Amino acid sequence: MAIEVKICGIRDAEGLHAAADAAADLIGFVFFPPSPRAVTPAQAGALSALRPGGPLRVGLFVDATDAEIAAVLAAVPLGLIQLHGEETPARAAAIRARFGLPVMKAIGVAEEADFAPVADFAPVVDRFLFDARPPPGGPLPGGNAQPFEWRLMAGRSVPRPWLLAGGLTPGNVAEAIRIAGAPGVDVSSGVERARGVKDAGLVRDFVAAAKGASPTG
Ligand SMILES: O=C(O)c1ccccc1NCC(=O)[C@H](O)[C@H](O)COP(=O)(O)O
Image (cartoon, rainbow, N blue to C red; front, side, top):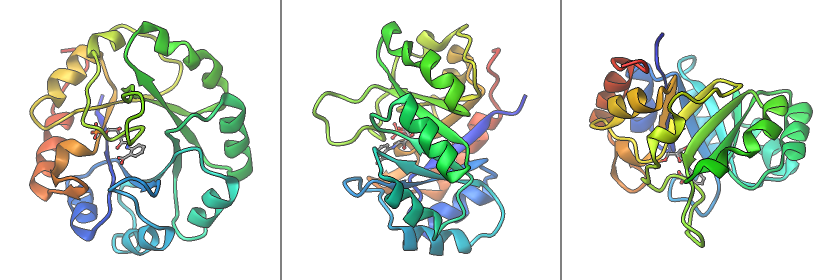
């Protein structure tokens, strides 16, 4: 089974072409203004148009309003909506129904109890993303180069397709996939040469390492 790879936080042409050239499956645009990786709807639309086809476009939102999501969708042909805030299952269901797109819910993980919301979200989302639980009061709810204990995922039955995220790099992604049994991975910081600046070589190395890895060891 091929490992699915998402490169998140695309905000320039180098990052976009690097991800597409490396045959990443998904790319993420961050629509959260406090992030160093944030793009406007117009910027994301212009970037996306540089490379028709290729990776599925994912829009990352943090507790966004319907109007904010609608403004993005008017500019960018998203194939998946990623919810990376405090959205409830009811809010995820409403977004999915209103915009007619699949939804991926990010779950912050630091301990076993953090998986409790999975059962409530499963009927109303299409995918999960398991990321490190952000530090309390930290500046960003994701994209912090912070891994969590991959063994918490091992042998876990997740009722939807899922991605592993948090602190992944070209050097550790194969081991992370093996330990977590992950069918897919998501990276941002680990393929950057400076905060918010994707590096084509690191993107290429990451995708190659992930695609060459096996979740069953
Ligand atoms: O990347 C951001 O700036 C960001 C801001 C707000 C919410 C989520 C954000 N990023 C999510 C991701 O990039 C990934 O899903 C994941 O967190 C992996 O990040 P990293 O540990 O940096 O590889």
